[in-house]
Figure (tube, rainbow, N blue to C red):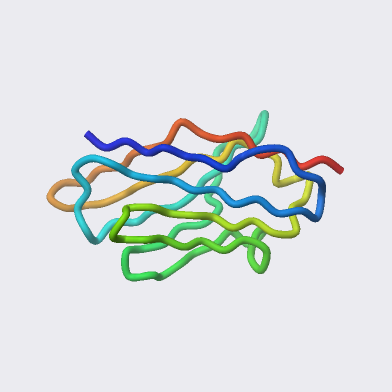
Length: 118
């Protein structure tokens, strides 16, 4: 079984920064994708950023140039540096792990609240 534990959420003023971290534990195979999704009240969960084990990244247009995703494969850890935060970034942020070896699997963290005040 795999567990994802997030940390780093909180309250910040617009224009500020936060760093989210997620540590994965359990039976994790290489060649996976880790990332972050978010869900604001009344809205669907949406992709924020993902990164492959090889370092390829993909960002939502709304966060490009402001957020940076990184990972440490040896520690099965993924981080999200969020700069120039806006009130519309307010949401619960979820860590995500996806892989397809030996079988397809995906896991979610419990979520961490990020609140950006104007």
